[in-house]
Length: 308
Image 1 (spheres, rainbow, N blue to C red):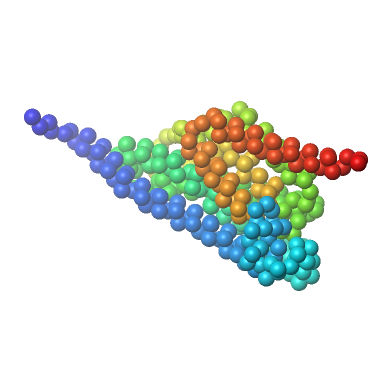
Image 2: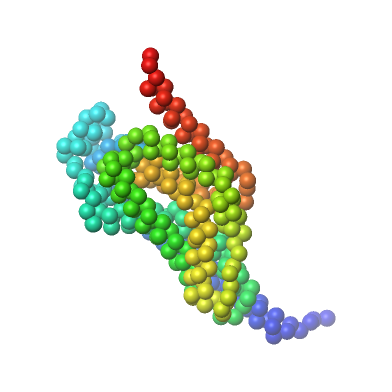
């Protein structure tokens, strides 16, 4: 015997179906922004590769020197020619030695693109959860991708704020001589300090609480479900949890070279795995790795300084 469905059930099912159709639009929006971020970063590095010694940009970047105009010369000769012939600011990815306002804007844009490329993809599970919530509620909210897109923009706003802080930190470190013109640390003191602090943070209660919030999003609600402002607020709240979870790993860029696209990809992948798959082992493993790396670097300095 066929049971007639109630109007309420029909409306709820329609909302869920509409939500299913809206999610690909959200995913496409995230993909376009993420690809744009990566395109900018790749173009920035590609502009540097032909004329600069990329090994000075941090570990792993030396492999790009095979495309360098000075590739057949010794590392010392490449470095000398880079200083003599290629002043800082010779490419759009390099700030000038005087660090003008235009350079600060350039650095800020780079950090924003790093956030878009590295962090926005890690928000996909959260955005999918929010989209499913709106779909389950049905109505116009579940039928539209706009509230979820608004949540993505709120999430990004938090990381844009981080980009501003990172820009100021980069300017300060460069002004103090702690960063080279290739935006890599000039001494192991900065590298070991950043690695050690980032490793320790992996074991803090704040890290664990924020990571659980990333694994299992909790929605504040309030107001009419699905409104753009409500979605934006949910994105900001989740973005704050993500910032609390990932700021330390993101700051490892100061230890490995800010323009090091190899580590941009690696750290982005690590954070995506950490936020997507609930596990106590992975965050601890990341922390142990960073601490051991810092201890190893510090021990090499102490051994080198020890009397023969």
